[in-house]
Length: 392
Image 1 (cartoon, rainbow, N blue to C red):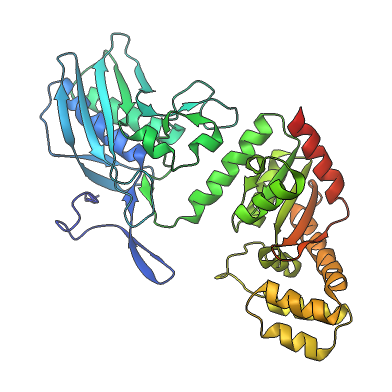
Image 2 (tube, rainbow, N blue to C red):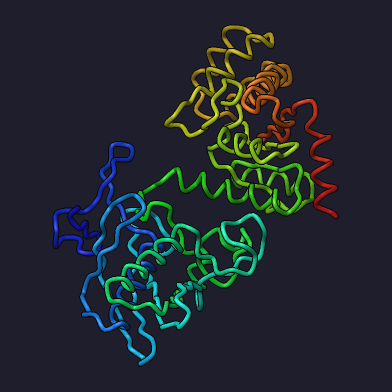
């Protein structure tokens, strides 16, 4: 397989691209790929091999990367090399920072991998690594180990090696990531399941949601509070006088969040969100991003008719841009409460259909202008259970 150099942008016409929303975007490579490449070259130099400006690794996805080596330092009994992280066209807090690996010899034949400065430490259950371990996930650990084993075999070294991964800018970069929220302290995580960063990857967002749910479950939560974003978080804080950071943010991925929470065995899930997103659930739409579906006004209009509104009111709703504008029309017609009752019945049906009786699932819907608009029948009871657990 020919080497695909993402580091030499402009030097070779073989960069990796994906098309997202009709735009051609350049892929990057993960911190795990950087750590593996830096480890491989450091081991080569340590064991007497020839230093090269670029080193090749094969990612778990089968792509062969040729990554540029920077800042080579030899200390006699150990060698350090760095690879600069390239996030491609993705918005990435770690883009451009140096990932170092310092490799030293061992006498026991083992390959040992650890994290130092700028690599986070795990402090909570439910993550990829046990509490106390460096936040170097399983796939990057395997990549580093395989790279070091290959060097040992090719240079006939049987004594084993230690690779210490460090990221001098990692502590600062970690503040822009989910790590503090996930209980990973003092640095970034060394991540990657494919070795390649795909710009605007929905998979990465869903994986983050799953990690948060894993942590909740591992730490004894039986019920989980979920909000799509900051609107839901702030509403919960203002109405319940509780810490909104306890909620799992699911973004647009409501269906995937329900699926994973059910698979983990949660007893209950309470979803709190703004009408602008939640109204789509009444139509069975479980990914609320507008590019997948936007039937907000159609759903509001149809349910206003069921609630007793006339055709003129329904027609006005269809011309609205925002759900708050639609609520103004419903309010003038005196049918907000009845319309929301119809919508909440449908939300309740579709949420439970997605959960397939795997757990209790409830929903609270609000508007920034009108406040709480509706809730499913068991929402208050489930909210009380979540409050009680939070205060323990």
